[in-house]
Image 1 (cartoon, rainbow, N blue to C red):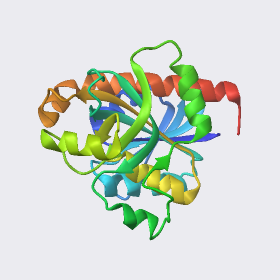
Image 2: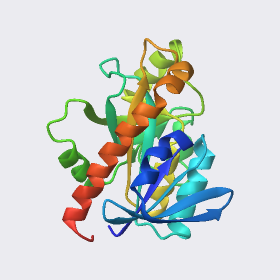
Image 3: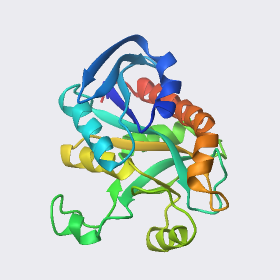
Amino acid sequence: MNKIGILCAGDDELAPFLPEIEGCETVRKAMLTFHCGKIAGMEAVALYSGVCKVNAAVAAQILIDHFGVDAILNAGTAGALDPSLRVFDTVVSTESAYHDVAANILTEFHPWLPDVWFRADEKLLAAARRAARGREDVRFGRMVSGEQFINGEQREQIRAAFRPLTVDMETAAAAHVCHVNGIPFLAVRSVTDNADHDGAENFEANCSRAAQLSRDLVLGILAQLGEDGPA
């Protein structure tokens, strides 16, 4: 993999990456600012898309079409749905799905999936597992996405239907775009709230620290990919 796209939802989630970009140049496109340079020795383009599925999808497609990235890492924060997760644990996606889209929309129509799940890229997953070796605060599993903060009964409903570790508003959309373009994808999200917390309030309180933790694991993944050499 020669050029990596790093896609964050918000400016606070992008902020920890900006000091890491060597030779940074910015490009404006579709009301978005793309930061281009090298991160951990790899060519990279990083941005924040804005919150929600459509914004993430727009950004992912531009990363692919205009900047020619050959993989996308979705980095940032998420809410915990698995009760065993703690605030500031970091989750790596093995697969992702929409919790607010009817299953047959994706299985009976484009992109004609066998089920509702977009699978993470195996090479990126392997690099993440190496980067996380020995760390108890990193978990691997399912993520789901939908456009709302999740509280109360919604947590139980989504957990029963999908058995995910985390919930956010963008991962599945970025994974969807990567799937139809044949581009490797992986999400790295650190937890800002769990079942005992209000999602929106705790996101604001914990976003900055969680974003730094997500950044740290992404840097580890990039270092592992650099050791692997070009695909």
